[in-house]
Image 1 (cartoon, rainbow, N blue to C red):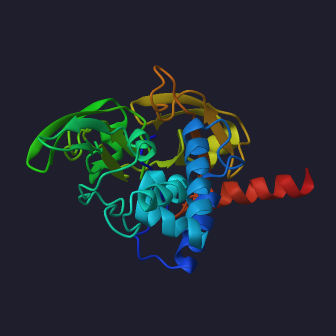
Image 2: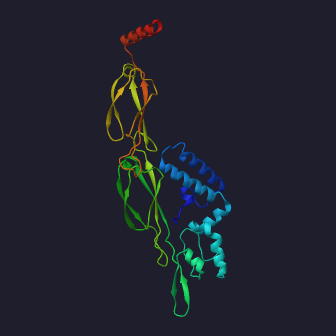
Image 3: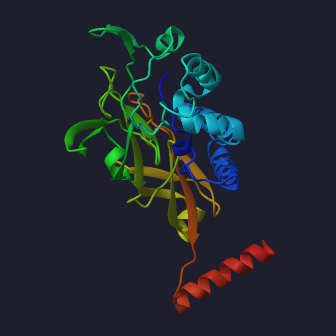
Length: 303
């Protein structure tokens, strides 16, 4: 079972109060609720993780076990029974999930099997040596939105080691990905920990991103909105020509299917590009223009 940092999921630290947990949960649950993110598998996954984190951390007893035993918190009672059977103090020899060291006390067969221990023989007395997974590392990486429109490579330095990372197009702001085995070294031959990278995206474009869809405001002159015509519009990757229907109203939305942001880890699949027209009223009219608009006004009144 992989370790899941429930505090990190809710954007909190271990000193968070019950009120902090409740507020963080409500905010994130609203953001990633399936009703607001239809057909978004990544949002659905985040929503489930948010609920799981809240279920554990909002329960005092479960949170206490989680703080002490990390990913094995559900086995806390069994662990402490096993320790008592060996005559050890349940409050010693098993530090919290932050990756601190463990004692060399002997463990029962049950405890050994639970954590993947191996039996080794000493010169006079056999003892159990238990393998433990290494500490998980957390890192943050800031990128521009334009950086993640296509697959991109980055080199991270974690604990003095350089790691080349290929970032799939379409990654979300504050999304966390796991790089297996790039955390701290294991104990007694156990597996290395994992590296969790959180992405902070800066929107360096004029577009707004909601999931895989991009939104843009486009100004439309009064005459084109009334009579129709052709305009050129910037999308994320290129300009496109649009036909404007006659008598287009202010606030009209136009959807360009498949012209939005790439869908994470889904080849050649994109969201939609949604345009909202904003009709611009002409300024600094000439005398002739005012005269013509007056004639139009009379025609509308008496037509």
